[in-house]
Length: 580
Image 1: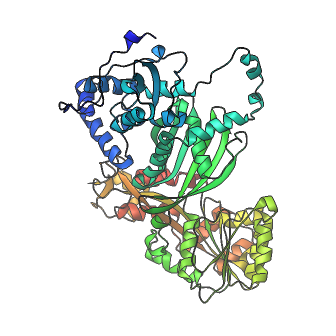
Image 2: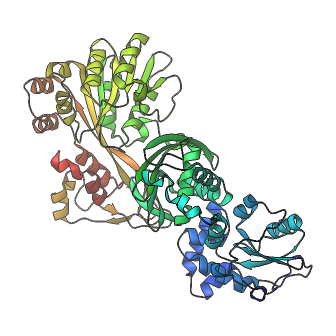
């Protein structure tokens, strides 16, 4: 690179009052790179996430990095230096620390006659320009360059002659990491841009009300996705050069081994976001493109631990509370992963007077800490399994036992014996219907006569999205729809129901929040006889319906008729019922 490619366009320490400059967003709109609507979105996101508008726009995928620096060049009157014009070797300048250059995206280009030309991603940062001047004593002449070009140039090692052969066998082929590479990852993960990016990703869960954050590596970068109200939505795209650094930052926060990228790992992050304490359960698994990371958001403040606010119909709640008030027996909650089973059990425990009862839970993991309740985290690595923990806590004189999940026959047998010896046992099972829990326990090796003696009832549940109150739209369904869906049983002729529309308040989805739909299967005398006779799940469901039980779909129809959700959402959530 020659000196004449670097014109002295700016004297940053001059005292002249600068002329007013058009805003960056306005320049991008004028150049046709950005729509006014997208600019408004980006400005809102900037208020949420903080940081410079240009970086927010790139992070949201609305413009490219090149679009931003071209507009900045017009705005500031500063020349752009492409990566091809960077010097082959960075000039050595006394007083410049590599950490400072990385943290502020600065690359020294040339030092000549008391002037230092530098490539900067943010040349308008007067603090950085002044710091460079104070550190080196040179007049600083900033030029624009792509953040990615600067980062790549700063990260490229100087390879000495003959070093290529040594690097050919670096152990990467078997998935192991050299010490220098791990240290480099740690350095990258500790740099300000990466820290800000990870903080912004985690920070979005509050505004989005997300339950999970997914970081998924692919060829084009790290895809960030958020699960909101049970449905996954696309988020940011992290450039490939930062993918490993972002994942390493998350692993550092979760106290995981960043050198281990071949095996799954689990950890936990405790953090405060916008004044709220958050627990993040972190899981990593290796994929062909790198590590996939999922963070489950455990937000104690957003969890409703009152049964009355969880969507129970009045008659169902009364019967569930009566089962909960029994001194002994098993009460099960069933449903797929993410259907709110554990939250329902926590809410049930919250109704019980912990001061008058000894309550012990065995969980994997302990999702929320409950006051006055003894909670045990299982550790299979040291043989503290559900079954082994249950055997031990029976000697702790408990009144009520909660088992996070009945995973095997041994745990089920101990739970039955606990119920038969005077304990109230609460637990969960993965079955599609409430009656299916009886068949599952039989499959686990529990005899029918023991099930009828120990089990009091089974609650099956799902979570349906609730309509956004700002934009939901009423309409009258046709009679054919009312009859074919079964809605006619719960909604009168001419009664309107609602459809999802979408607005700013619900981010265009038409839904905001979720509520439960339930079916409560109670083991009365006719049901106990049917179980001992060996009836199948369909026969048990039919018998329960004769006794007045509404199934999940029917309970959902009540919520459709009440204007809480839609027929489409109910069909989406209960589609497994056809095969149950």
